[in-house]
Length: 393
Image (cartoon, rainbow, N blue to C red):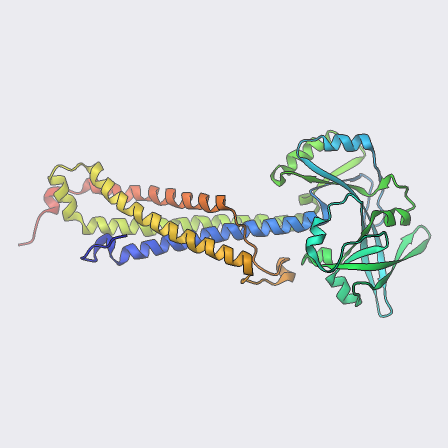
């Protein structure tokens, strides 16, 4: 942007301060929203990876002690798949047990997965080994592996309560996963559904429940409502948000904080540009008076100053966008900002690289700043040519 030779007024240091303030405001707003989006996406992906979007189970089931099975009913399955928004349906069953080594005993939950289970999430969380390929293969977390001193290829002796006695199984550790979700990593061992069916003396048509994946997470409640219409009365339906209220309440709290940040930074941008415009109007009072004396209307004079202020606003927004996008790309690629995985359920700050997000925030910043300019611009109509053109003798 060209600067005037006198270095004063709008082209002086105040214009630089205004541009920097707007740029910093845009950077903070974009980073706050993109980090929140990253957190929400990562947490939701991890939780859904363990429990899907929707879970159908027997109304009388108590997974802490003994699941009451549901029947794999082909007609019911077809009805569920026919509900708009349902993307995939899979089966699971869980069984509590104990892993025993020569040194210690550790309580676990064996989560048996059907052969049609979407294991994309677990494949992405593998830190060693491979996914289970037989009924005796299991996937354990790095937390359990460290506590029980187990490695890929080791035999894992596990005991389950069945009826009046314990039943033992010797599993092979085929792989080790890590999600950084402590409540899951400390508990779950991933295995085959058929093992749980045998431990519970179930036949092949009996499972612990159906897991349903949906196309649009934002329509989760609407899809759940539609599913209730096709489920038998003795089956219950639970969304992932209802299953893990603490995690999603934490994300809702972050939403409130982000809203406050957006409001504060919008005010900062507005104050910066309003201050710059007011001081410019005061300094250029004689020029304004001269223009009015020559026949310029209030609207035409206001337009001149608003155009100059708009150039500064756009300059600040573009600089802020460039800085924010650069930081997001660097963070997404190299993860320079680290986190305590035990506290935040992930080892680094996640970011949501959504171009629409950057555009929306830029437009909001532009609109807020332009609206804020209307008040100081209105002062121009109160400037009298006679008064402003007076000179001191």
